[in-house]
Length: 392
Image 1 (cartoon, rainbow, N blue to C red):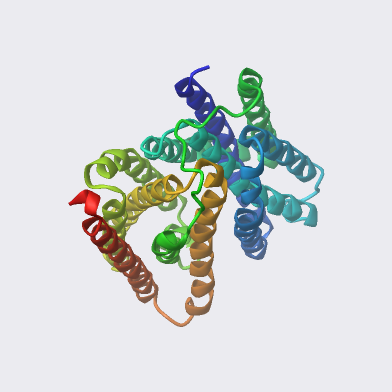
Image 2 (cartoon, helix red, strand yellow):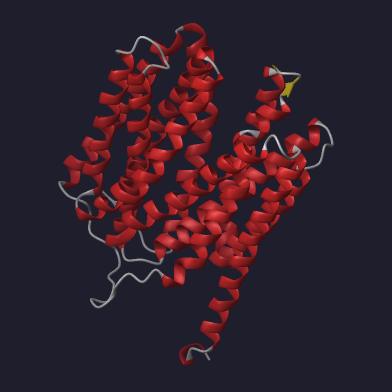
């Protein structure tokens, strides 16, 4: 099986698993909301915190073995966790929250294993295409999975959503098993590094910081649509659907646009440019200028966010040797979700003290600092190239 065909099958597995995952997220959220806002809040907490733990402590384990085996193990764990929810009486039971935490804990491990697998069969230059394709699948399946989950929740309730997600995981597992049987082991790396090369994260510190700061600002998108769709304590579902679905379409467009931009101006300028445009969108989001501006600014913000994320992830993963790709991807995810979680914590403290517009402006300030950090990295990179005799 060729490298290109192998990638197609891994993309297929990712698409299947993501449709089921998005359907599950909306299905379990609906179930928790029916139990009360406190249950929904706890559900969000057990969704984000374990992701950071998994990305820090479990993702590095991917580099010690076969990434395809790691993906299969994660899928097996997911099936067991969903079976536990099947056995729970209510969506807000301890059993359900424990299962949700387990699903979140292994989520970054699966993505790190995917990235590590791709890194071992793909050149440095090809990684931006891989991560662009993963982002495309994520947002396409976001749209499809959310619709499927909402429909199944309405017709078959939570058990129907769980059955749908389990079927997707089993199908993904079958695809991965087929890949493993073809190769028996992970394919060889396309390019070799000098034997003395050791991972040195110092050049990537600005990128890590920029990822954290940008998500510290952009994390407001998790509550922004619901806030604007709620008036006098009543949620307008049509407004919420309009904002969320338009956000998803623009995020998909951003993921589609990242490769040509990346190849045209380079990794670091793409990261810096996306950061400053995202910050400008957050400034627009802070304005109380009506639904059209809310939809347009938040959607554009998500689009630039996808360009930033894919470019940053691609740049960072391509900067290390293939046997460190899983660890690096885990650190990237940790910075991402730490920023999102930090935004939630800040919102919980400031929500009753400041107006929404002021809070969003603070988010924009965080994104502008991320732009400044990325710009510093661009300047430092150009100075380094200019001082290299080989480039003169």
